[in-house]
Image 1 (cartoon, rainbow, N blue to C red):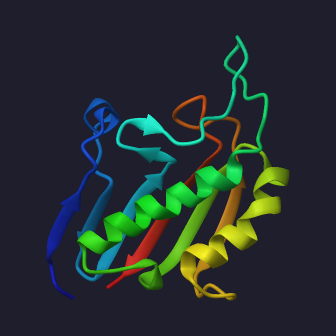
Image 2: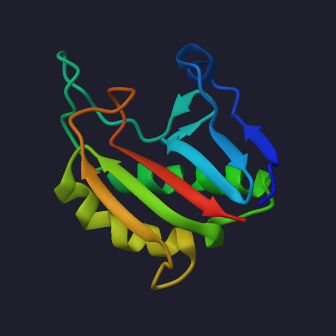
Length: 143
């Protein structure tokens, strides 16, 4: 196995503030940090939150999930890879009913096939990095 290392970022403020990279290649494996729904530093389809910061509507889960995969695909492209190279994904979702309702079609669209060839785990979580986020996807690819 090669000891090649490459890192990639989007240049968003939270990479520096938290102290991490969006993706890193070690040898023939690319590890992606949890991808969230953003374009630049703007959250895509932000969930509405009440004065306590709690999400009041989960209907943007599908739109956010699409953006997570779009961001992942962009990072993978930088490594000469694609979602076809993904071997494992973990989806973190605030509402399991909402993710169950949209994940199948969105995932099949992202992977471009009716039977994505990737291991997948869905985990319910009480909160993500930003209050307006509904979903986050972490991926591992082999190249």
